Amino acid sequence: MAFPKTRMRRLRATAGLRGLVRETELSAGRLMLPLFVVDASSEHPAREPIASMPGVERLSISAAVAEAREAAALGVAAVMLFGVPSEKDEHGSGAWDEEGVVQVATRAIKQALPDLLVVTDVCLCEYTTHGHCGVLRKTDGRPPTVDNDATVELLARTAVSHARAGADLVAPSDMMDGRVGAIREELDGEGFSETPILAYSAKFASAFYGPFREAAGSTPAFGDRRGYQMDPANGQEAVREALLDVQEGADMVMVKPALAYGDLISAVKAATRLPVAAYNVSGEYAMVKAAAAAGYLDERATVLEILTSLHRAGADIVISYHAKDAARWLTEQS
Ligand code: PBG
Image (cartoon, rainbow, N blue to C red; front, side):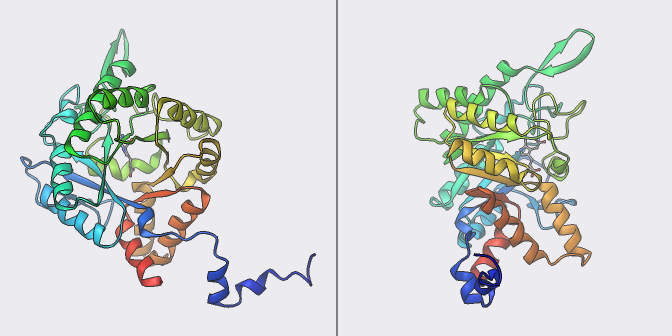
C-alpha cells in the first residue's frame, strides 16, 4: 500500500523508533587498527608523526605495545602490524627474520595483551630496496618484473615466522597468484594449522595508498604496482580473485580500498559467504582528516557514517586508522 497509507517517516519520528529498526550497528569489536612499527635498532624516535596522516605515528616496539593497550581498552578487536625496518635488501629478507620488527612487535604485544588479536601484514614491499611486493626477475631490455613463484615461497616463509611469533591471523597483501595456497601449506607443515589466513583478495592499484607509502617507506623505486594489483575498473575479476582465495584455503577475504569499492564488498560477501574485511585505507583517512581540519566536515559524524556504511555493504570487519576514535565514539553514543 502506497502513500498516504504508507508513511516511511513514521518509523523515523523519534530516537527510540529509529533505534528499534536500525539495520546495521557497528561496534568496536568489528574494528582493526593498523600500526606502523619501527625496529629497535633504528634512529626513529619512539613516536614519529606521519605528515599525511594526522594522528597516526610510526611507533617503537614499546610505543606499539602502549597503543595496542589503548586500543584493547576501547574494545577494538585487533591490531594489524606493518613493519618499517631500518635495513632493506633486494629480496626483502627482513620480512621473515625471526628478529624482524613485526616478529618482535608481535611477541611483545601478545605477551602484554594476550587477548588482543594480532594480525600481521605479509608482504615484502617494506623490506625490499626497490619497494616492490616481491623479488624481481630481470628481463632483457625491458624493466624487471616481480617473479610470482619465487615471491610466493618467501611470503610463505614470512607467514610462518609471523605465526611462530604468535600472530593470531596472517594477512597476505602482495597480490601474487597462488600465495594463499602456498601459505596454507607451509603453515600446516610447520604446525600452524590453526592459524587463519585473512587474504587481501581484491586489492586494487589505488591512488588512495599514497599516505601509507610515506608512512611505511614502501613507494616503488621504479614503475608501479599495476602488474600485480587489480585494475580499479574490474568488479567481476574481484569476485573471481576472492573465489580463488577461498579455493586455496582463505578463512577471510578482504576488499581494499573500501570507500570507492562498496559494490565489491557486497558482491564478494554474496559470492563467498566468508567473513569479509574492508580496508578503509590511508588516503581515505587523510581525506577526512584534512577536510575536518579545514572545518569542512564534522569528523566524528563523517567517520561513523563511513565505517557504518562499510559494515552495511557487507564487511564483517572494518580495518581503519580511525578505529580508536570510532571505538570511543561508539561507546559514548550508547
Ligand atoms: C603493502 C600494503 C599497502 C597497503 C597495505 N599493505 C600499500 C601498497 O600496496 O602500496 C595500503 C594501506 C593503506 O593505504 O592504508 N603491500
